[in-house]
Image (cartoon, rainbow, N blue to C red; front, side, top):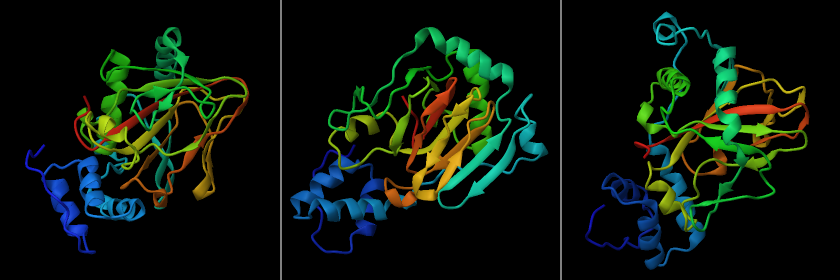
Length: 273
């Protein structure tokens, strides 16, 4: 981080200034503090940071062809749906059945009540918005995780080191995850703590490890889309800025019968530590 303090200029057209400060390594929290000292109201700060967030590169699925499938041993993924708004792709057969079963078996003994991000502290907290059980694998923790992580990195042409470890979740009947965003709100006080580990989240992979008897779809309310949970399938979506306009509001609909098991991978701007 640059050590010399600075104050944001007071003129209204600030997009290039913000991009330059980001390139110089200043975090969103530093920019927010500077803009607020210069008299900018919170709503204007949020709009400015959101308008300049699109400059970052984004992971996007590569075309599935012979050159790519050579790097995906055993898997034969299929693209079932692609949207531009939100930037979303639904896959079939991305994971092998035995890989799904292996992840479930490895995760089951370590399940705990799921948490959401505590916006004020950057830590975790249990809430009624998320009633599943879950656990985190460290990146590359075992051979199964290594194989899946390498496959996703090859599919997206995104550095493996820019991904968080896989999180496995189990939803029992009646449990759900109400609609939410996966990016970190730059105006929340706990965000600076979260960004230190690898920058902003820029994309999400949800991998379906089983097929529930009923319910449990992944819903995108702003897009009017429901993605059914089908074993071995997945949904991927990216977001170029922390803004509802990305269309990535999503949630896990309640499971009606049976269980739902998913693995989630979040992708970061930089190396995740």
